[in-house]
Image (cartoon, rainbow, N blue to C red):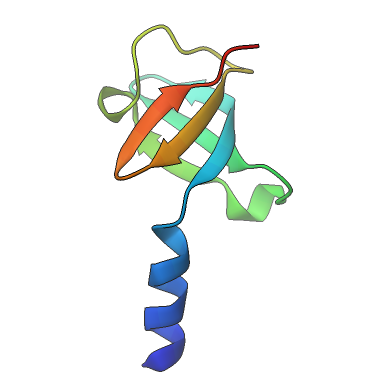
Length: 69
């Protein structure tokens, strides 16, 4: 049980992601420094407008923002 709680707490920390694939209304996000097996599958409605493959995002406080290039 403690292992599950520790993993959940890590998911709440600020992280940077890159959009690696978009399929219909869903996007695959890859955390910086992680592999494909850790991709996050997320509804586009939860992401800021105007994202595309290659867009970098910052996640913090349950919100995603685009990182300026």
